[in-house]
Length: 473
Image (tube, rainbow, N blue to C red):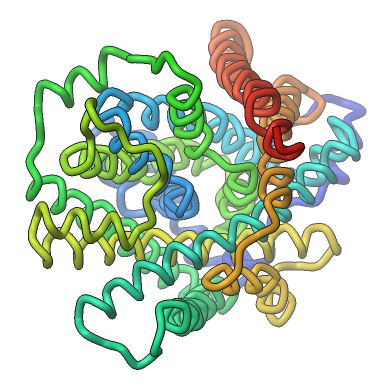
């Protein structure tokens, strides 16, 4: 991996842990050919570069697969059911702020080859690095439960539609399908630690799942009809709700775009593939087309599907819908196959892809915490850390647990952003890769906007939602 040029006396930089022993170890010849190809692409025009980049994407798709889970489903569907098309602008903006930060993270990681946990520990503060890792792991485990709840319910609704009653009850059906989902997710997750060919197959499966999500919800929206004038106004008028519930829905949509564990997954996915300086342009392209675009399309279609079938200003929706009820409503409006079945399949693709990426990031975090390389039995064992989440099909959390976890994550995400902001401005870390002049100003202003928005949301959530829920007010 390419090493950055560092100032004289910067011995600390040479001590950083660099890279991951995955693709760079398993298939160095293929990685060398890829770097040579990218070097040649850099000499060509924009069109040729973009065409070449499209064949090598991967980590960006993983990000969209991770964030397109139950949180995105509920925040998007509820936004459409309550406010129609008027909040369509929220998810694109939220993910754009995330893309800004992830582009900075990609620049740092690919310029130095350093593992961010070690870099943050040395150049920001050990307590920040440890809090970042532990918070990301806690979020991954806690947020695993609602994925199974959502997926088990959608699968049980499909079984109900096709007349399958072998489980005997809804609870039994949800648990049964939860374990089927778990088995599928373990098999796919373990591909990532099985060699370079396993990673390639993993990437293909994730792309297919994300495509299924987008296409499924698109079919439902086309079937229920698109209100083009409302679509344009929803994207461009930036309407802000005036009541507390509306503000909560809007802010929830902004926060659902990026989770704290995504900031851990992305740089380690880059290192796992052996990417270096030659991949910086590819990483930016991957974030735009692999992370931002699928997320915006999927959540936008969800908002429109809910708006087309449930939105009624005279009788607003006042409680969140489960995927089974949502599918049944859509089935009544769009037909049982295109409405109910296709919608349930899209929900299943959402939660399965998110569960897989939860397991992957759990392995990265745990291996980094315990000083192990994420390969072999270590990778497989640590990827199983979130699997108690399968019980989310039949049990509910005590109220305080998700409230506390979400509060910690909402508060720490802007802190993690600040840590990456600091790293982006340290020459003793980035060396000649540190932006200067106008580029430095542009980077810093963009990152500060993202930090400001997320900090404002974290404080608002803490005061208006977190503390009142925790203390029963």
